[in-house]
Length: 324
Image (cartoon, rainbow, N blue to C red):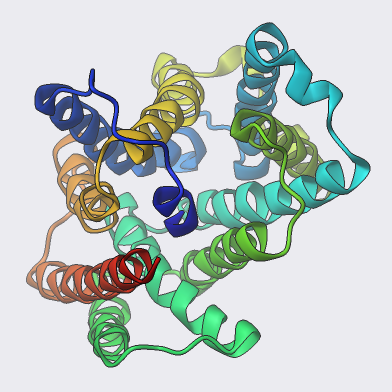
Protein backbone atom coordinates (compact mmCIF):
# COMPACT_ATOMS: atom_id res chain seq x y z
CA UNK A 1 0.00 0.00 0.00
CA UNK A 2 2.95 2.33 0.47
CA UNK A 3 3.62 2.44 -3.25
CA UNK A 4 -0.03 3.14 -3.92
CA UNK A 5 0.01 6.02 -1.49
CA UNK A 6 3.14 7.57 -2.95
CA UNK A 7 1.73 7.47 -6.48
CA UNK A 8 -1.76 8.63 -5.59
CA UNK A 9 -3.43 11.48 -7.42
CA UNK A 10 -3.37 14.97 -5.89
CA UNK A 11 -5.58 15.46 -2.87
CA UNK A 12 -9.20 15.95 -3.85
CA UNK A 13 -10.52 19.42 -3.14
CA UNK A 14 -13.86 17.92 -2.14
CA UNK A 15 -12.23 15.88 0.63
CA UNK A 16 -13.19 18.03 3.59
CA UNK A 17 -11.53 17.30 6.93
CA UNK A 18 -14.88 16.14 8.32
CA UNK A 19 -15.27 13.64 5.45
CA UNK A 20 -11.79 12.26 6.07
CA UNK A 21 -12.48 12.00 9.80
CA UNK A 22 -15.74 10.12 9.19
CA UNK A 23 -14.01 7.79 6.73
CA UNK A 24 -11.24 7.04 9.24
CA UNK A 25 -13.87 6.38 11.92
CA UNK A 26 -15.55 3.97 9.52
CA UNK A 27 -12.33 2.03 8.99
CA UNK A 28 -11.59 1.98 12.71
CA UNK A 29 -15.02 0.63 13.63
CA UNK A 30 -15.74 -1.64 10.66
CA UNK A 31 -12.40 -3.41 10.44
CA UNK A 32 -12.20 -3.57 14.22
CA UNK A 33 -15.61 -5.26 14.47
CA UNK A 34 -15.16 -7.73 11.62
CA UNK A 35 -13.31 -9.99 14.07
CA UNK A 36 -16.43 -10.01 16.22
CA UNK A 37 -18.63 -10.76 13.21
CA UNK A 38 -16.39 -13.66 12.16
CA UNK A 39 -16.55 -15.05 15.68
CA UNK A 40 -20.36 -14.93 15.62
CA UNK A 41 -20.51 -16.69 12.26
CA UNK A 42 -18.04 -19.52 12.94
CA UNK A 43 -18.26 -20.12 16.72
CA UNK A 44 -20.17 -23.40 17.29
CA UNK A 45 -20.83 -22.39 20.91
CA UNK A 46 -23.07 -19.55 19.67
CA UNK A 47 -25.54 -22.04 18.17
CA UNK A 48 -25.84 -23.19 14.56
CA UNK A 49 -22.81 -21.67 12.83
CA UNK A 50 -21.23 -21.64 9.39
CA UNK A 51 -17.85 -23.42 9.28
CA UNK A 52 -14.94 -21.09 8.51
CA UNK A 53 -14.05 -22.00 4.94
CA UNK A 54 -17.70 -22.37 3.95
CA UNK A 55 -18.12 -18.85 5.30
CA UNK A 56 -15.15 -17.67 3.20
CA UNK A 57 -16.79 -19.16 0.11
CA UNK A 58 -20.12 -17.43 0.74
CA UNK A 59 -18.59 -14.10 1.78
CA UNK A 60 -16.28 -13.69 -1.16
CA UNK A 61 -18.55 -15.25 -3.78
CA UNK A 62 -21.20 -12.63 -3.06
CA UNK A 63 -18.73 -9.75 -2.59
CA UNK A 64 -16.68 -10.80 -5.63
CA UNK A 65 -19.71 -10.99 -7.90
CA UNK A 66 -20.83 -7.58 -6.64
CA UNK A 67 -17.40 -6.12 -7.42
CA UNK A 68 -17.42 -7.79 -10.84
CA UNK A 69 -20.82 -6.24 -11.58
CA UNK A 70 -19.49 -2.86 -10.47
CA UNK A 71 -16.50 -3.16 -12.79
CA UNK A 72 -18.68 -4.36 -15.68
CA UNK A 73 -20.90 -1.29 -15.23
CA UNK A 74 -18.26 1.38 -14.74
CA UNK A 75 -14.90 0.02 -15.97
CA UNK A 76 -15.66 -2.45 -18.74
CA UNK A 77 -12.53 -1.53 -20.67
CA UNK A 78 -10.44 -2.71 -17.71
CA UNK A 79 -12.00 -6.15 -18.03
CA UNK A 80 -11.34 -6.30 -21.76
CA UNK A 81 -7.65 -5.49 -21.27
CA UNK A 82 -7.05 -8.31 -18.73
CA UNK A 83 -4.17 -10.66 -19.50
CA UNK A 84 -3.72 -14.29 -18.50
CA UNK A 85 -0.77 -13.32 -16.31
CA UNK A 86 -2.90 -10.78 -14.45
CA UNK A 87 -5.69 -13.29 -13.86
CA UNK A 88 -3.19 -15.94 -12.72
CA UNK A 89 -1.28 -13.65 -10.36
CA UNK A 90 -4.35 -12.03 -8.84
CA UNK A 91 -5.80 -15.49 -8.28
CA UNK A 92 -2.69 -16.45 -6.33
CA UNK A 93 -2.93 -13.24 -4.30
CA UNK A 94 -6.61 -13.88 -3.60
CA UNK A 95 -5.94 -17.36 -2.30
CA UNK A 96 -3.07 -16.15 -0.10
CA UNK A 97 -5.11 -13.29 1.36
CA UNK A 98 -8.63 -14.66 1.55
CA UNK A 99 -7.99 -18.36 2.16
CA UNK A 100 -4.58 -18.50 3.85
CA UNK A 101 -5.23 -15.19 5.60
CA UNK A 102 -8.89 -14.65 6.40
CA UNK A 103 -9.91 -18.30 6.06
CA UNK A 104 -7.29 -19.56 8.48
CA UNK A 105 -8.08 -16.65 10.81
CA UNK A 106 -11.73 -17.69 10.79
CA UNK A 107 -10.74 -21.29 11.54
CA UNK A 108 -8.73 -20.11 14.53
CA UNK A 109 -11.56 -17.91 15.78
CA UNK A 110 -13.64 -21.00 16.44
CA UNK A 111 -11.67 -21.31 19.68
CA UNK A 112 -9.72 -18.04 20.10
CA UNK A 113 -11.58 -14.92 21.38
CA UNK A 114 -12.02 -12.18 18.79
CA UNK A 115 -10.11 -9.61 20.88
CA UNK A 116 -6.99 -11.75 21.20
CA UNK A 117 -7.27 -12.65 17.52
CA UNK A 118 -7.27 -8.99 16.52
CA UNK A 119 -4.27 -8.24 18.71
CA UNK A 120 -2.27 -11.07 17.16
CA UNK A 121 -3.35 -10.15 13.61
CA UNK A 122 -2.22 -6.59 14.36
CA UNK A 123 1.34 -7.92 14.17
CA UNK A 124 0.99 -7.94 10.36
CA UNK A 125 3.44 -5.01 9.88
CA UNK A 126 6.04 -7.00 11.81
CA UNK A 127 5.58 -10.11 9.67
CA UNK A 128 5.72 -7.99 6.51
CA UNK A 129 9.06 -6.55 7.62
CA UNK A 130 10.41 -10.02 8.41
CA UNK A 131 9.22 -11.46 5.08
CA UNK A 132 10.72 -8.49 3.24
CA UNK A 133 14.05 -9.11 4.93
CA UNK A 134 14.13 -12.91 4.47
CA UNK A 135 12.70 -13.13 0.95
CA UNK A 136 13.62 -9.79 -0.65
CA UNK A 137 16.69 -8.85 1.42
CA UNK A 138 15.12 -5.55 2.50
CA UNK A 139 16.96 -3.49 5.06
CA UNK A 140 15.20 -3.26 8.43
CA UNK A 141 15.61 0.12 10.10
CA UNK A 142 16.67 0.22 13.77
CA UNK A 143 13.25 1.62 14.74
CA UNK A 144 11.58 -1.33 12.99
CA UNK A 145 13.79 -3.76 14.89
CA UNK A 146 12.66 -2.13 18.12
CA UNK A 147 9.02 -2.49 17.03
CA UNK A 148 9.54 -6.17 16.23
CA UNK A 149 11.12 -6.80 19.63
CA UNK A 150 8.34 -4.97 21.48
CA UNK A 151 5.64 -6.82 19.50
CA UNK A 152 7.19 -10.21 20.25
CA UNK A 153 7.23 -9.41 23.97
CA UNK A 154 3.54 -8.56 23.77
CA UNK A 155 2.76 -11.85 22.01
CA UNK A 156 4.66 -13.84 24.63
CA UNK A 157 2.53 -12.24 27.33
CA UNK A 158 -0.70 -12.80 25.42
CA UNK A 159 -0.15 -16.49 24.67
CA UNK A 160 1.49 -17.49 27.94
CA UNK A 161 -0.16 -20.44 29.75
CA UNK A 162 -1.99 -18.16 32.16
CA UNK A 163 -4.08 -16.56 29.41
CA UNK A 164 -7.68 -17.25 30.44
CA UNK A 165 -8.96 -19.91 32.78
CA UNK A 166 -8.38 -22.76 30.34
CA UNK A 167 -5.55 -21.29 28.28
CA UNK A 168 -5.57 -20.83 24.52
CA UNK A 169 -6.33 -23.70 22.15
CA UNK A 170 -2.99 -24.65 20.50
CA UNK A 171 -4.45 -25.33 17.05
CA UNK A 172 -6.51 -22.14 17.04
CA UNK A 173 -3.51 -20.16 18.25
CA UNK A 174 -1.29 -21.66 15.53
CA UNK A 175 -3.85 -20.62 12.91
CA UNK A 176 -4.04 -17.05 14.19
CA UNK A 177 -0.24 -16.78 14.21
CA UNK A 178 0.07 -18.30 10.71
CA UNK A 179 -2.63 -16.29 8.96
CA UNK A 180 -0.75 -12.92 8.97
CA UNK A 181 2.20 -14.69 7.34
CA UNK A 182 -0.02 -15.74 4.45
CA UNK A 183 -1.67 -12.32 4.25
CA UNK A 184 1.67 -10.50 4.48
CA UNK A 185 3.38 -12.76 1.97
CA UNK A 186 0.53 -12.37 -0.51
CA UNK A 187 0.47 -8.61 -0.01
CA UNK A 188 4.20 -8.17 -0.61
CA UNK A 189 4.17 -10.43 -3.66
CA UNK A 190 1.19 -8.56 -5.11
CA UNK A 191 3.12 -5.29 -4.85
CA UNK A 192 6.47 -6.50 -6.14
CA UNK A 193 6.03 -9.42 -8.49
CA UNK A 194 2.38 -9.96 -9.43
CA UNK A 195 0.97 -8.74 -12.74
CA UNK A 196 -1.68 -6.18 -11.77
CA UNK A 197 -4.67 -4.85 -13.75
CA UNK A 198 -4.76 -1.12 -14.38
CA UNK A 199 -8.01 -0.79 -12.41
CA UNK A 200 -7.67 -1.84 -8.76
CA UNK A 201 -11.33 -2.88 -8.65
CA UNK A 202 -10.65 -5.57 -11.23
CA UNK A 203 -7.84 -6.97 -9.12
CA UNK A 204 -10.07 -7.03 -6.03
CA UNK A 205 -12.89 -8.78 -7.91
CA UNK A 206 -10.49 -11.51 -9.09
CA UNK A 207 -9.00 -11.87 -5.61
CA UNK A 208 -12.42 -12.21 -4.00
CA UNK A 209 -13.67 -14.75 -6.53
CA UNK A 210 -10.43 -16.74 -6.21
CA UNK A 211 -10.86 -16.68 -2.43
CA UNK A 212 -14.39 -18.02 -2.78
CA UNK A 213 -13.26 -20.91 -4.98
CA UNK A 214 -10.36 -21.67 -2.63
CA UNK A 215 -12.68 -21.51 0.36
CA UNK A 216 -15.11 -23.93 -1.29
CA UNK A 217 -12.26 -26.35 -2.06
CA UNK A 218 -10.94 -26.37 1.52
CA UNK A 219 -14.46 -26.59 2.93
CA UNK A 220 -15.03 -29.68 0.81
CA UNK A 221 -11.76 -31.26 1.94
CA UNK A 222 -12.69 -30.66 5.59
CA UNK A 223 -16.26 -31.91 5.16
CA UNK A 224 -17.69 -28.58 6.28
CA UNK A 225 -20.78 -28.74 4.08
CA UNK A 226 -22.14 -31.57 6.23
CA UNK A 227 -21.78 -29.57 9.45
CA UNK A 228 -24.35 -26.86 8.87
CA UNK A 229 -28.04 -26.62 8.07
CA UNK A 230 -28.45 -23.30 6.31
CA UNK A 231 -32.17 -23.30 7.02
CA UNK A 232 -31.49 -23.46 10.76
CA UNK A 233 -29.12 -20.50 10.98
CA UNK A 234 -29.93 -17.94 13.64
CA UNK A 235 -30.60 -14.30 12.85
CA UNK A 236 -27.35 -13.28 14.56
CA UNK A 237 -25.30 -15.47 12.21
CA UNK A 238 -27.13 -14.20 9.13
CA UNK A 239 -26.73 -10.56 10.19
CA UNK A 240 -23.02 -11.05 10.98
CA UNK A 241 -22.40 -12.70 7.60
CA UNK A 242 -24.24 -9.90 5.79
CA UNK A 243 -22.14 -7.40 7.75
CA UNK A 244 -18.94 -9.10 6.60
CA UNK A 245 -20.05 -9.12 2.97
CA UNK A 246 -21.57 -5.66 2.61
CA UNK A 247 -19.87 -3.52 5.23
CA UNK A 248 -16.57 -5.34 5.76
CA UNK A 249 -15.75 -6.40 2.19
CA UNK A 250 -17.47 -3.84 -0.03
CA UNK A 251 -18.03 -0.56 1.80
CA UNK A 252 -14.90 -0.52 3.95
CA UNK A 253 -12.64 -1.45 1.05
CA UNK A 254 -13.92 1.41 -1.10
CA UNK A 255 -13.66 3.83 1.82
CA UNK A 256 -10.06 2.71 2.36
CA UNK A 257 -9.07 3.18 -1.28
CA UNK A 258 -10.70 6.65 -1.24
CA UNK A 259 -8.72 7.56 1.86
CA UNK A 260 -5.48 6.57 0.15
CA UNK A 261 -6.22 9.21 -2.51
CA UNK A 262 -7.14 12.07 -0.20
CA UNK A 263 -5.37 11.56 3.15
CA UNK A 264 -1.74 11.14 4.27
CA UNK A 265 -0.75 7.49 4.44
CA UNK A 266 0.55 8.06 7.97
CA UNK A 267 -2.99 8.91 9.06
CA UNK A 268 -4.65 6.08 7.14
CA UNK A 269 -2.23 3.47 8.48
CA UNK A 270 -3.23 4.19 12.09
CA UNK A 271 -6.00 1.62 11.61
CA UNK A 272 -3.32 -1.03 12.28
CA UNK A 273 -3.19 -0.21 15.97
CA UNK A 274 -6.71 1.16 16.49
CA UNK A 275 -8.56 -1.88 15.10
CA UNK A 276 -7.39 -4.31 17.82
CA UNK A 277 -8.51 -1.93 20.56
CA UNK A 278 -11.95 -1.70 18.94
CA UNK A 279 -12.04 -5.49 18.57
CA UNK A 280 -11.23 -6.10 22.24
CA UNK A 281 -13.90 -3.65 23.40
CA UNK A 282 -16.51 -5.03 20.98
CA UNK A 283 -15.78 -8.61 22.01
CA UNK A 284 -16.12 -7.67 25.66
CA UNK A 285 -19.35 -5.67 25.35
CA UNK A 286 -21.19 -7.88 22.85
CA UNK A 287 -19.84 -11.42 23.44
CA UNK A 288 -18.74 -10.92 27.05
CA UNK A 289 -15.18 -11.94 26.25
CA UNK A 290 -13.09 -11.40 29.38
CA UNK A 291 -10.61 -8.56 29.62
CA UNK A 292 -7.90 -9.71 32.02
CA UNK A 293 -4.88 -7.86 33.32
CA UNK A 294 -2.76 -10.14 31.14
CA UNK A 295 -4.79 -9.22 28.05
CA UNK A 296 -4.45 -5.51 28.82
CA UNK A 297 -0.71 -5.77 29.42
CA UNK A 298 0.08 -7.97 26.42
CA UNK A 299 -2.33 -6.12 24.15
CA UNK A 300 -0.91 -2.73 25.08
CA UNK A 301 2.62 -3.90 24.34
CA UNK A 302 1.54 -5.38 21.00
CA UNK A 303 -0.18 -2.13 20.01
CA UNK A 304 2.92 -0.13 21.00
CA UNK A 305 5.09 -2.45 18.89
CA UNK A 306 2.78 -2.06 15.90
CA UNK A 307 2.72 1.74 16.36
CA UNK A 308 6.52 1.78 16.30
CA UNK A 309 6.53 -0.34 13.12
CA UNK A 310 3.97 1.92 11.41
CA UNK A 311 5.98 4.99 12.41
CA UNK A 312 9.15 3.47 10.98
CA UNK A 313 7.38 2.59 7.74
CA UNK A 314 5.91 6.06 7.38
CA UNK A 315 9.34 7.62 7.86
CA UNK A 316 10.73 5.36 5.15
CA UNK A 317 7.91 6.38 2.80
CA UNK A 318 8.49 10.06 3.59
CA UNK A 319 12.22 9.77 2.86
CA UNK A 320 11.50 7.96 -0.39
CA UNK A 321 9.02 10.66 -1.46
CA UNK A 322 11.50 13.41 -0.55
CA UNK A 323 14.23 11.77 -2.63
CA UNK A 324 12.01 12.00 -5.71
